[in-house]
Length: 228
Ligand code: IPE
Ligand code: IPE
Ligand code: MG
Image (tube, rainbow, N blue to C red; front, side, top):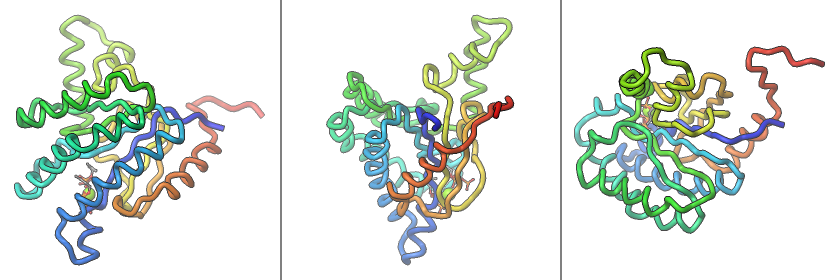
């Protein structure tokens, strides 16, 4: 049975889900945001240590201005309303990605959510915002080479946004596409990948449980040979 310390989810399919019901894409984002709470609580119950959620990529700025504005508003609302829920469940909040690109008020909310949950000792919820793995790796290299001439994997890891976190064990993408879209490229080097056609607003803990139990049975070889 494989341990599951770090679960990463690419929460995709909000827009298509809304269109399917004849609604605006923003409605899909609102319902998708609600599902974050449910899946987070369930992941914490399962004993997962880190839950990384892809919420806004470095490429998502290329969407229409109105959609980006909706996503920023939702993020701000999420930070305001979820902190108490996270605290209640002993869940620590943190972010990965370059948050310097966000408005001052949003950055303040992010700091506040981190501070308010800093004492929590259960799961850590890692929300990826303005996150792109290429951007993260370049920032890490630029930072690390200020003090190191030669980089090792360990030195680089210590400068990634995920410094101190274990590598991704299991990565799930909802929405039916089989790609990573610039998420955790370094950290998911040996992750087990699961792609489901379910659109994010409909992704349930029942499906999460089924994927996790399949993951637990998978033979993870890490390039070695498992003796019989
Ligand atoms: C994922 O849903 C949420 C974000 C990228 C912010 P999408 O908005 O990508 O929904 P689809 O993939 O277009 O259906
Ligand atoms: C990935 O979804 C990013 C998030 C879920 C936040 P996208 O919808 O942006 O990815 P592509 O464009 O289909 O690759
Ligand atoms: Mg998408």
